[in-house]
Image (cartoon, rainbow over all chains, first blue to last red; front, side):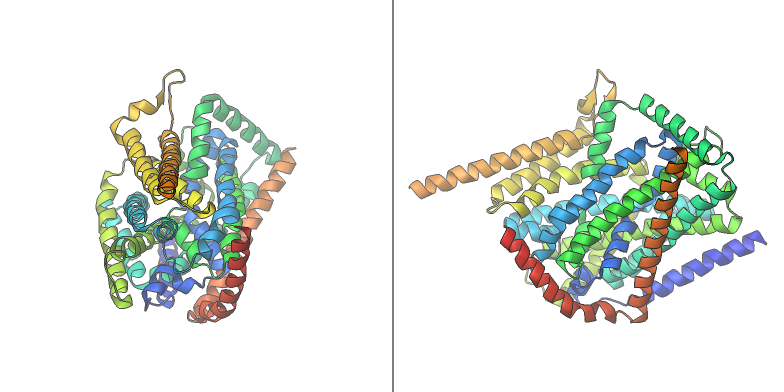
Length: 472
Length: 60
């Protein structure tokens, strides 16, 4: 009987999701495919940003961290919330204010030159494919757990379904389905927490505080200062303005919506982390202490909720992974068309739409194949973070704020930032080990330093050249 | 102190639920209008956007 109810709930969820995706309708022009006509209202911008935020890392990952290290990760999560608010205040409105801008590459192209745009496009497409591979693996893992399918076929199903609605609907379909997936998840997990606090937490507030204190002390005792600094850096910069977020900033109806969407998403992420960490802390008195971090949420829900609730959580979890995946596929396809194809060819709108759709399918195929090579969800994401922040952020943020950005500074910063990050991540990973503390410093720190130095050097060289020309 | 922590957690949970309901309502409006809502908003939004854009330029 339980199985029938569970299957009915899963089927009902899939039917509603399909209905929502169909109602989002197919994009008819490239501007609609890439930017949803730059007309998204605040609630949808916020919902879509928050849906990308509350992916598997910030749900399964944070519940596990709350279980092991209590409030420590809530403190580290503050860096992520601050990042969203700072982007909302300082960067998103400036990005939205640029005219005829579809991508980050476009923004960089407008501030620097065409070569910088193409390089930013190549980095964006590569990183979107990398992030998409990580999400494909995560989605495949969840689907395998639900239906017991082989991993490769689970990955193919997740990527295939996501690519289908993203290819036709573009950004609008991505944002609409994100909003649906976000709403379900944002209601389901806090309700689970309230259910646990009301009916399963024996000892009430005192037990909760005791468990929180014990876990937090353990967390601080087993995490070194350099590790905490590295984690704060990764949370502060790693996901800053990755292409899907930038697309939402650009697609907002107004600069004000763009700013407020990011600020609200930052405030929301803080409340979200509190709920996730609280779930982890509550789980300490309900499930066995030796439970693996990634299994805490599922085991907790399985032991406190009815079978139907558990089935619904699994299917919502799979769809929240799809919401991150669809954003990445769309962002990668738009970056390919706008930053790599368009600078070299005068492409009419209908052809751009076809190229964008074809690129969505190709990136989805690369992600499905790449999912096999992803070592784990967290390590895969950290690799992408380590490359993205140094490669793009210095050139983008400085370019948006200074009066005359120099193309040489942009090229050097993006090129050297990418190379140093790849070198520390793949070729000489031992260089990032700090022997005295026997821990590992994320590659993001040296790569970001190198990118900033390269920017300053490029800016300075260009300035000297300009002054010499003026003197001659 | 322990009661205050628990109250903060409950407030956070309620805030997340309210956010979910708010986005769900916006979603229902958007899809029940068959996608026409953002297009209608676009006219006023472009006007607001232009005002915001000029404000950003003035600060530069």
